[in-house]
Length: 533
Image 1 (cartoon, rainbow, N blue to C red):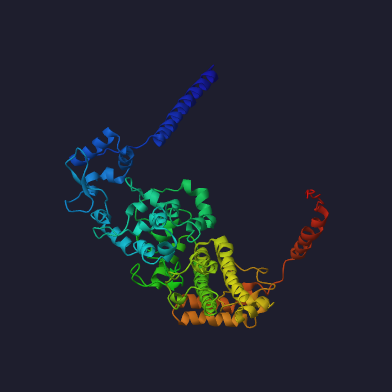
Image 2 (cartoon, rainbow, N blue to C red):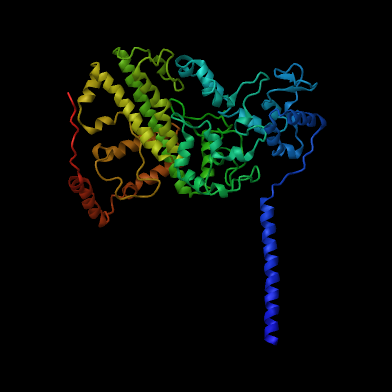
């Protein structure tokens, strides 16, 4: 009997414990699902605006957005952002209202509370985005009807809008009104609204990179509402992590997207950035970017990766020089009708205003504006496909098209080039290179009929080119020391002092079977339809 009672007591105790646990779990889940709605207090003027908009159904969603913002929580209402004076360019009164408001809040309005951020933005290349479109774009100003760019170039380049009140920029390009969300500004897709497409496909490059792969897999688990000014608690970087957010090693957050960019790699020639943009030397900017990399990567990996990307920028410059040389040569022989003198030594020019009426001019232009950018951007952002097939491959094809056109019109140098059957003819410009790979040594990748095997004194010449770039001040002392260390051990880096694994021969044998024997065995002989005369 005592045993039965004991069992009953145990069952009762466990039942109570189970009920308690279930109540706790239910409470936790309810708390998770409950939407937190902070108490919002606004001044009388803002309350009038809100009540009127909600009552008349005039853009009520912007009120919903505002109520979900930090502005609403801290008591920043309508009038704080929309306050206007009678002589302001955008001053007006709503119907049935005597309140004077500004239709277009500008960075000057934001600066009342966010002075440092507005100042940082104004010193960045985002701040001059409209200049790049409006003043220097014959592709837009000559080749395209202006109406076509209203919802095209302008929609993105207006992030650097020049307002009548003297302020520069559009804060809501990244922080959409009226929520002005930090989460939105931190998401890669926000940057991808503009950094997309054939000439600057950064969002595509990011998503194809290992960084983007990790974001796609794990991004929904990340805390996007982390405290402003602190390093991002992510397992991979986003656009904001690299260019804006605070880091563990390199200091505070910034709204100056130029602060960690040591190359101007969107321009016709890659140039090391000047101190004006970001208020730092290019060497300091590069260190800032390395600080971002150090949060996840070893020092040796990060430094080697950026060194290789730097050499890609230098290599591109040599290719663009060769592109211009051929353009001028074709102009000399009257193959190209357009004067190309605007290219002469002008690092920032695109194409003369008479251009775009000959097909070959598009190949010349794209060798900078499309493929040349992708080649450089891909190398900087781990976008392998964009560095290779959308980058250097198409850059080389464009250059060959230019030479072929010259040969068709009897340009002697082009004719000689086309008749030459030596594969080395495609080495049209001085080369940069670095032994081995950032990803680690491979004993196979650098064997065979590669330029380093075909060209005499390849590594000695490449070394001298890198040395000259260093002496010109285009590489840091640390980069030059690292390059020398790698070069000194180039045989190990290239894996040429190690025998291939035994399975290599087995692979080669079976690949031959795949490519030859199976093709013959599996080829199907089909009948062609008879076509009536």
